[in-house]
Image 1 (cartoon, rainbow, N blue to C red):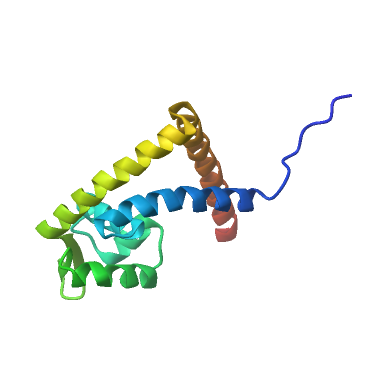
Image 2 (image 1 turned 90 degrees about the vertical axis):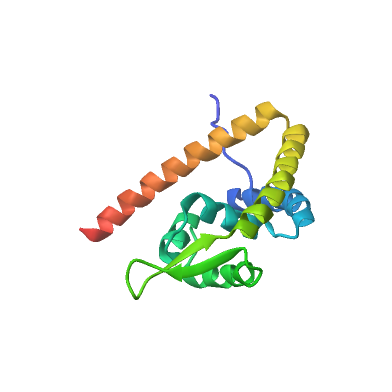
Amino acid sequence: MNAIAKPQGCTNFKLRHLMRQVGRLYDAEVARSGLKTTQYSLLSHVLHLGPIRPVDLAHAMGVDASTLTRNLKPLMAEGWLVQGEGPDARSRLIEITDEGRKKRSEAQRHWRTAQEKLNELLGVKRVLALHALIDESIAVLQAADEITEGERDD
């Protein structure tokens, strides 16, 4: 009789450990541009989605409004992002400036270097498999969340 193998250890702990190691690699490289990886991500989102309302940006990035506000402040202080008027008097839109585009481009070169280092360390085949596993896992968990939310609405 064959016993079915069960995962050993805490999946959450293992994922967090992996994220810390990967994060250190990206953080160290992107920091060479003077940005944190979260700031690079924020500039990238605004570049691709902007002009955008803060609430929509927070949703797209999966962060709450207070976290977004806190993360926007230093980028606006540097002149890389601006907050302008929206379509009505109560709304605002976040936009990237020309200086913000330059800073994001500089950081992107460092991000690409970090990505290449990770590909080299883990091997492209392993990174591709990891991406596929992550994408599949996210889809399964999101579908489960939608079912659970639907049950709560009933």
